[in-house]
Picture 1 (cartoon, rainbow, N blue to C red):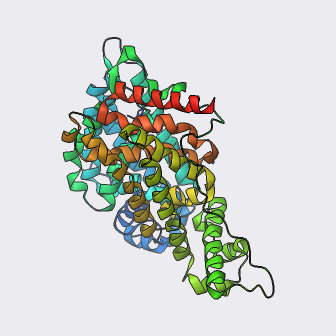
Picture 2 (picture 1 turned 180 degrees about the horizontal axis):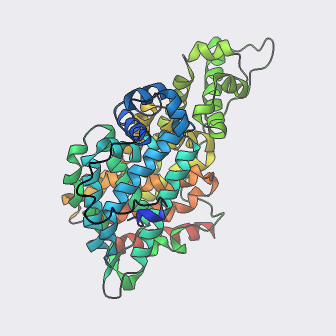
Length: 464
C-alpha cells in the first residue's frame, strides 16, 4: 500500500503539449539513456543482473560503451535508474486505489493492479522484486527507501480507519513481506502468468488479520514485543554453532580428518564474517583466508572458488537450525505454543550467530542464483511448522496453502530488516509479534492474541 510515486521519486513530469499539437507530432524515439535502461531491464530479467557487462548492455541498446559512461557512472547507476523507472510506473498504477478509506476497498484494486503490472511486464517486475536485491549499496538504499515509504503509507491507511469499520491487526511491513515473497518466487520461476489468479488468496490472507477498529492493533503495540533483556524461557538455551580455534603451530597430534574439519569450518565462518563486513561483491578469497587463518592452498583444497565457499557457509547451519526448531516445536502439545517455541529457538540462533544470519538472510541475494534459490528453500522450510495450523481451527482446513507461504514471507521480512540493520541481538524481542503473525490466519486475531498473552504470562511467571 505505497504512497504516491511522487513521494518516492521526485522526477519532473513532462509538460503536456500545446492543444492540437500532440495529435500531429510523431511519437518520440527513445533516447540513448532510455534505450540503455530498457536494455538492462531486459537483460537482467532474462539472465540476471550480476553477470551482466556494460558491453552487453550497450550492445543491446545499440550504443557504444563510451556513450554508456557519458550517461551513467557505472552499471549500478544504470540499474538504479531502471529500478526507479519500474517502481514509479507500478506505484502510479496502484496509487489511485489507495484513496479509499477502508483497507478492503483499497487492497483489492491496489494489489490486483500490482499483480497485473508485474504479469504484464515481468522483466520490469524482476528488476523490482528480484534483481534489485543483488545490486550494490546504492540500489539497496533505494529499495529500503521505497519499502519504508510503502510501510509508512500502509500504516497510515490502517491507523486512519473510521470507527465502526475494520482494520488489519498486523504490521504493515509483514503484509509487504508476504506479498513480496509470493511475487518474487513466481518471477524467479517464470510463473508470472499465474500471479493475477492469486489476488483472492492474497486478499483473503490479509483479511485473516481483520479486526474492528475499536479493538485496536495489538500487533504493532508494545505488548507485541518482549521487554529488552527478557530471558527466553521454557527450553534450553540455543546450542551455538561454535567457531573452531586455529590449529596450533608445529606438531599437534590431530588426525587428518580433524585438521580438514577445522580448516573447512573456519573458512565457512570466515566467509560469513567477511561478507557481513564488506559485502559479497567486495569479498575476495584473500580476505577469507586471512580471516580464517589458513593458507590459500588450504582454501582451494576444500572450495573451488568464493561462490562455493559462500554456498557451503549458507548451508552449514541449516540442519542444526531445523533440528533445534523441531526439538523445540515437539517439546509441547498445543500448536500455538509449538509455534512460539520453534520461533523462540530460531530467534535465539539468529542472535547467537549474527554473521551466519547476515549471510543467509541478506548477502545471499548478492551471491547469485544458486544462493537465492537456497535462501528460498530455507524460507519455505518454515511452512512445515505451519502445516498443523490447517487442522487446528474449525475452518482452517479450507484455507489456501498460499497462506503459509505468505506467513513465511511476512516473518522473514520482519526478521530480515533487523538482521540487515545489525540488530540481531534485539531480534528475539519480536517473539510475541511473530508468533501472532503465524497463528492468527488459522485461529483468528482474537484467539491468537489470547494465545500469545497466555505464553507471555508463562514467560513472566518463569522469570519471577
